[in-house]
Image 1: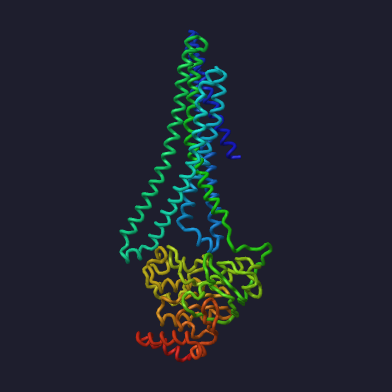
Image 2 (image 1 turned 90 degrees about the vertical axis):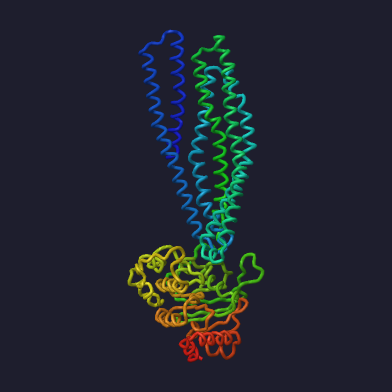
Length: 577
């Protein structure tokens, strides 16, 4: 309805503009015949002023309606893209770079909005104005009208040829813009590493090279645009030249009046705008079509984790996890990350997981959190196949402390309460004390309202990990997974955290992945993983006796602890032994 009203206002603007030359014709013919009067001229001037005022109001109306529609379309498309991205899995984000997604959400979306706003207006206006002007011109003299429109087929052929090249070159420009955006994002995100390795000059040179390629691609695009728009003007002025030559001869011969010729030229000027706008409109539409095609490509992407029809919503999860012959291979990987894995986790128990780098520990954590798809019947929660459950019901049962901590440029309190935005400060401080970071937070100038910068840049690695642990504990979910979440914490603090979270684990299922033996020493069961399989299991004392790998890292860490003076950690592990 809104867009229809906008185009109606646009059509009225064109009709009013087309009526003004008729008033001019009557005035000029009256002056030529000597029949014009002062009162008649005043009436004609008043009519033109009134029509000009109506044009101004109607133009405001169509701009408000049509351009407002394009902005709402942009908003809805942006919301749809954002919602779509939130539902995609890890495989998708492995294919799509952040820079590409940012380019689609900014540059491409702006091109779509412009083509659906001013581009659509210019197109409708040009078509309506062209048809109406030609009809009004034909009513004056159809032969002269045929002469005036004779050059137009040349413009149509040229536009068709150049439009294809415009599409290809604009797509290349957008893809290069996405690469520049991703390079800038990754550079800023890794600025400390770049400065530490003194790679500022190299990164600047790389960015300059990409910028030069972007400029060159834009210049190639501008060649097409620079050809189309001036040629449109050339065709329009050629039509004017033909009208002046042949129309002038008709006026001199008395076949048409001077008023007819003046009105005809005025209509031709109205027709000149659509002819010149054709190149601009084609440019906007090609840009919009290319960008929309890229956006549609994003929206057509589908997650590999699809909820089946009639998926079961678990209102209450006990926390029993059964892994039965689970195999998983990453896209484009040759070897499986998990190979027929067997695992059983029970509520009220703490399970430790240890193994060499790359053996599949983090992969298992990601699958338990439902970041990747799994085969039917290989992963069960409370005895139900996760592929028959809703994603939310499984994910809402799991509190994950990932290996790579993600923090936001916000306050400490907001970061801890990310999973429970309405949590009060007492609850936030309570889990911070369990994570052994409350004292350090209170020592900061603004306490829990301290802003920690992008990705927690103001905090140490150990502080970031402890915030992540506090955030997971605040959720109070039945399943807790800590994926090497204490690697940057000193041994004494590590023991304090493990001791503090015991009361949180009552009745809950806990899986702790670690390269250290100390956090695993009090676990009910410790699993040793290799090549995507569980190769041994037992408690701390038994694994030291019978598993060479576990005993080796134990002796190595005890020796390191002795050398660094960490006798507390050594004594505790010796006691467990």
